[in-house]
Length: 137
Image 1 (tube, rainbow, N blue to C red):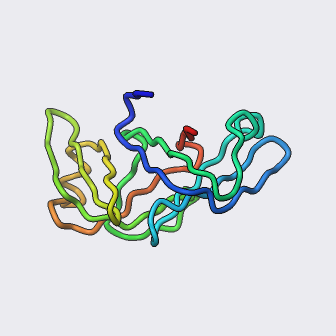
Image 2: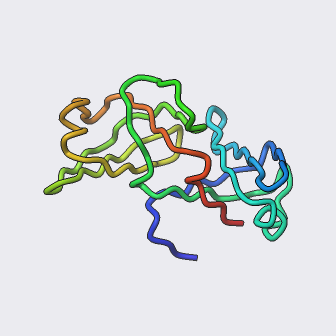
């Protein structure tokens, strides 16, 4: 399957918590990093998800927020990364990030790049909500 999303992180499901309507799925994408996704219980059943199963997490680059400091927020995913490249456009910039042996991309405004002084080799936190993660089996 091909998508327009810039980010795909694959790994093993390490935990599933099911509620009345939604389930929280935790995916270990590297030895140090896990990604949390929330999906409907219907989606969990249709994907036949189980602990130990392989899954891919898709995150649109425009849904990734960057911070120079770890922040306390309601977003479940707050991952320390390293900036590999910053490509400025007319309004927005593409920020390529490295997390362990994986890549992640964020699209942020040029104003944010300047305000945070984001540049190559900086450590930044990639933040995104669990509800922003799409799972593909």
